[in-house]
Image (cartoon, rainbow over all chains, first blue to last red; front, top):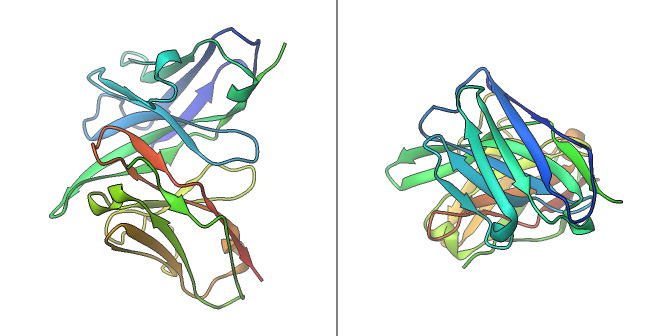
Length: 126
Length: 108
C-alpha cells in the first residue's frame, strides 16, 4: 500500500517562500500512469488543486497560482516537492500531497486521487 | 469550462437514499471521482470511473453520469456517512485538475 507523508515548516512569514516535501513509500514516483499532486484546503473551505508533476519532470499548475508555484521531483529519494513564493495570509491552509492515478477504459482516459498524505497545516504569519 | 458545481449542503434521514450532484462541462469528457472528507481527516476516494469503488468502500456508495452531470448516490445512509463530499475531474483540456466546492451531507 502506497503511503505519502508531507513534511516542512508549519509557519512561514509573509512574502517568503513556502516549501514542502512529500515522501512516497510503498511505491515509486518513477511509476508511469501517476501524477504526483499538491492540493490545499484553507481552514473551513474546499479543496484547491495547486499542480502536479509526472515522473518525467513535466508539470502543470493551477493557472491562478502558476506564477508562484514550482513542483519538482527527486527520484533518488522517492520524493516530490512544492515551493510557493511570495506567500500571504491567504495561503494559510492544510497542504496535501496526493497520487493522481490515470486509467483507461473504452470511454478514454480518466483520473482519480487514490492516495493522499495526512496533510500539513501551514500558517502564514509574521 | 473550468468549474465543477455542487450544492453546498444536503440532508438525508437515517437509512434513506440521497443523491449528491456535480455539474460541469468537463464531465462530458471525463468521469467524476468522488471523495469523502470527515473533520480533521484527509479526503478518501469513494467512487471513480464509471462506477468503481476502491477496496473497503461500502457498496451503498455508487456513481452515475449523464451529460454534464455526475451523481454520487448513498443508498441506506448511515450515521458514519455524515461528511463533506467533493467531486473532481480534469478540465476539458485534460491538463488541469478541477474540484467541486463540496457538499456537506447531514444524516438526520
